Image 1: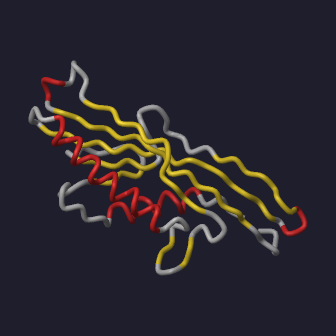
Image 2: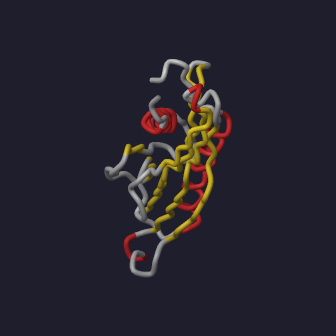
Length: 161
């Protein structure tokens, strides 16, 4: 029985990267440490943490059943060289809304009709907005949205993987 963390991160990177958000235009998706881009989503890392910690609990020993719960930290950055905070905040939330809707529409993190989490669900939680600080103000405007994708899943195996 393998925890679903690697597959869930892969699903987020692939499916968020495939989104089209007209209000945002081009954006980059990074698996971990980010590259440079005006609008960027990082999966599995925030400025506060770079870990995805899981809690596991054996549920039915005879059936080799285990439940897992974890949070994947994510950060979305949007920047602009201009002076309009509303413009960059609106762009950040347009992309965030698309991510929120994507995860809510696919709580089992399904691909081609097959759920990665057949006995679980993923949800976007713990949303936090940070905006341009006074020291950053001379360099343009920034909107940063930190959030988690919380996953609960039940893993069962009769073979004792």
